[in-house]
Length: 104
Image 1 (cartoon, helix red, strand yellow):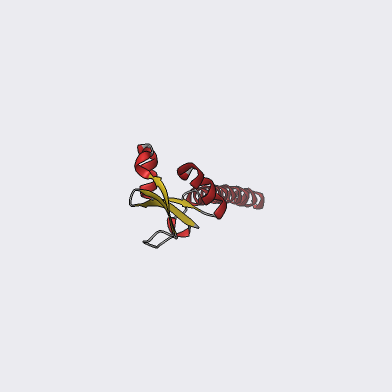
Image 2: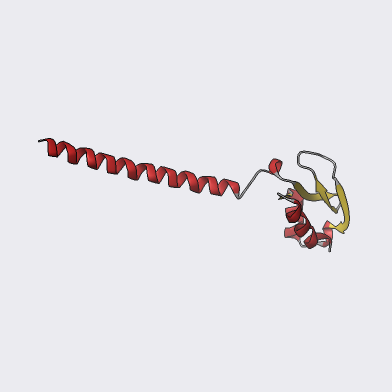
């Protein structure tokens, strides 16, 4: 009789471990997915538009920190839309690299 309870407990423990593993795995996947789309407020800077020109904003401000001569209307429609929505960058190197594409 005691061996039967040992088997039942072993099976219950195994099921619990499997369920916990699935929960942890799903939680990690969701966390990874969320960090790939960080909110604009956490960004170092946001590349956007100011009077049809490429501009750089400090997050959560209305006026640009810097405005470039590059005209947004000269860019392809898809790039114009991205700029109007705001392109978040998370460090100065990413900002410099992204600006090369728009102001060069």
